[in-house]
Image (cartoon, rainbow, N blue to C red; front, top):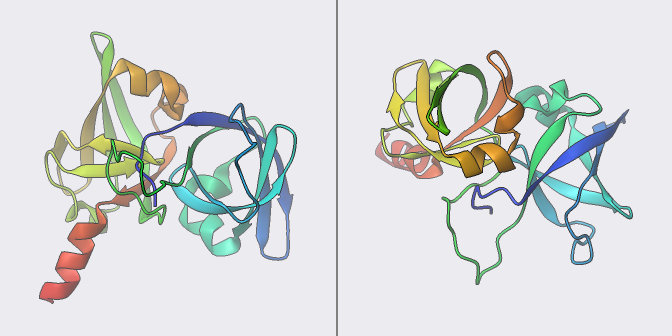
Length: 194
């Protein structure tokens, strides 16, 4: 479980095809002294398991299914990704509950500067829009955001300067693919009332 508060960004330094899908290796400035093999880390909103630890690198095995259902399959060496370690029981939540189970891939539709902030609009698969509400939570590439406005095919979020600077949003442009995780409570409620 994660909070959607990104700890750092990391750089993809290697992609190796494997029998299960691919192994991604990231270079990070994160202190790796407390990272363990088998630990869950959220990469661009996708919960992955640490399979190797180097001096300043982390490696993850990614299944073919995850590569298809997320933007991880589109990454190339040199790309930046968002990184968040899993929550501990005594941590503050700060964002919202993020499972790291991506619901779909959207696209950056537009980025409009508003003073030092930005208004981002994302295009999403229509089947996800029913889980979005204004002032509700959504994770975009693992970043906990508040929905400002939503339609059946798009939603908008106001991005403060800090979030823009410390996440991969600073490098995004219109047309870029982003991982979307809607609020899981809405999905459970829908299932219970069916």
